[in-house]
Image (cartoon, rainbow, N blue to C red; front, side, top):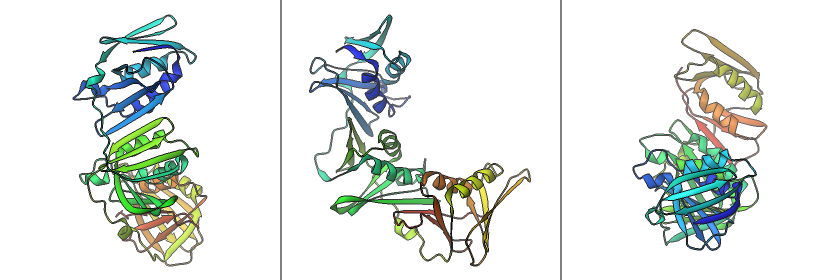
Length: 367
């Protein structure tokens, strides 16, 4: 394989798009590599971890059909370390790849492209929909922080995508809080649910741009494929039954008020400094026209914040994990938020006033 007089960024950008899924430790050494192959007059750069596969295409011409694999992180770090305006030459033959730039020369070990594992696409395509990248990116951002990390209920370590008529919904929960978001899409689709693995969600969140350019979502048998820009991401889906999230979202809470999101976020951030590092508890004490935010820790230190809120109902003293409140407030974009409570043992509901496309449920904790 040969690439001559190539701008550094022309190779670095597709490499950066795919290298994020390459694991540092592998049972298969070739999984630490990226596959470089010349097809259709362009260079295809592919990485996989056997659960997910990302391919980025670069407009770099070379001899058709040539392919090799090389260490993803080493090649990426070498290219990053070169000057921004560097021009490089790549020559791969046998088990070596030589990269030259100016007076620099690097010899890297390669492995045969024929041995590189690929995820084969399912033949049965169930549904396809297209939407602006910025819409999917915003939808993912509103739900991803509530995903579980290493729960034995493996189906919680991911995000549920629901296509239903003219809507696309994202739901994530770790059992202590739940985040639901929805957007309108063009078309009329049969209801379908898929659970995306956590790693796929995080990778998508990094790769999608805040632009109007389209992203196409293909739902296949046991797989999903996202195509946007010069990137194609194929992922297996989680085989499991996601909890009935509609039963979790409370309705009819009587204690309700609106507050400036930034003001509440700042008060919670200050109070969190003196929260218990292990349990991260915070008390919210609601009385007429006032919300008190109280944190204490094992050193008998205490933080108390007072906010004026437009509230006239019954008083309430309720505890939460403060991290769960900070997460949602940091990820919303609205100026104000609405908080609704039942009693001290009921979950709270956080929404954006005037919008029905987002709901966040958080369970209380004993303090």
